[in-house]
Length: 601
Image (tube, rainbow, N blue to C red; front, side):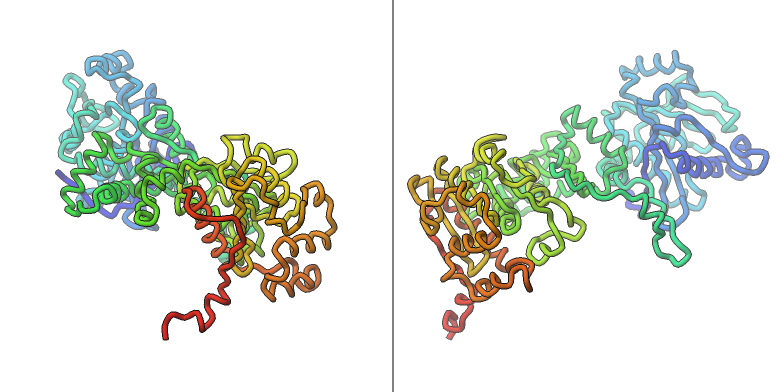
């Protein structure tokens, strides 16, 4: 079997852009002219021409040896959508073309055509022709072809070249064609019969085709003489979509998903393709059988797992529209088994399955963002409801794990995106307006289902109290981190349905009592809520400076990260029925890191 590893750099695009097609046609015609061997490809003015309507709607592949190097070869792949314009149909005539396919038991709608394989003379001995031919065949296999057809010259043995890829010449179709100045014959290839000597190469390029298709043609940027990007170029660039937050999962074995995946790749929207399914399968085998370390045995087990499917057909392709990434992952159960495999010994698989069956509500996605990501990483909950009215801003970058390209994105949207990038199989519902009188009931019991646990991390007094009223009525546990001195609050309304809100620190308070507070009244209420005598000196001092020298109270990334960890620990214990009582607990890092706490003499 031949397996070429030539370092060719290929641009792949679906033909629609007239400017791109003009350059492609000039390249083809110049090579086909072949120093005068085929004069039909040269105009009287000396320019080269190869204009064909078949170019529109076809896949075009251009190969270079270096990213900025000249094009050295080209091939075209036409799909059944333009089958009425196939070269082979024009060569045979429609009636004979369809009769030939019928005798082979192949439907016209399942037949692809590759054509116009051209390679510069200096690259013909480097294997570029084999590589491009294998790429077109592999792409057709990926796109669902049952058969391929095409015309082939015979003067230099092109027909014998195609036979190496599993094609065979069709009897009675050979005749001289003036345009090519040689005899031409129809070649036919049945996908189910493999790709001959180059089957391995075709299979590899079939799996690599999605990444090539996603890359698309290189964009052209206008520049000012100074070399800086021109304002006119910036003016035409659209901003990010700040609202999209749900990925799309596509299973290539499903015909509808297969068509959607193919259309997505052809759309030009895919910026990156990430396919590590082979490595993920190896991890799956080792996760199930840690003692299996023999590479040959692992490969055998992987073939068993695939059960006759090709690599690209297995599992799910996840489309993340906000980053324009297409990612290949294992099926849901296998994905989660591998992803949480290192939890074992602390959280075993039966416990993990129990956790994934839980739905968690999180209100306030600053400290709550840290909790949400910790939960997603650890597998605490398989479904979530997220609520926050605020947008991610520059001043949040001192404590939220996000990038500057996400400024202006709603925090619930941002958190959902980040969680889906950890586990695309999660069930997430978001409330971009935060928690209000209009949606509070739906947050707790509506939508996709009722929540099992509430994480409350917002700054609005009414929400803090109203959420606890609902939680107590529904007998739901509530966990809150205060981001100061590692203070964690746990209220087990599931076990103590008559427990006073916030441990009774605010008396018999009701949400209606805190609906219309002045700014000063809000500060006083929050101080009482967190127990002013126990807060850190730094936080205590900051309250008097709010609105004067401080825009808001201080928070650090280390404290937010600690809050996520504390919420995660409490949530896991509660949801698994492990000891976790109501109360207020401190993990004060000032005290924990004091010299007298050291265990080393």
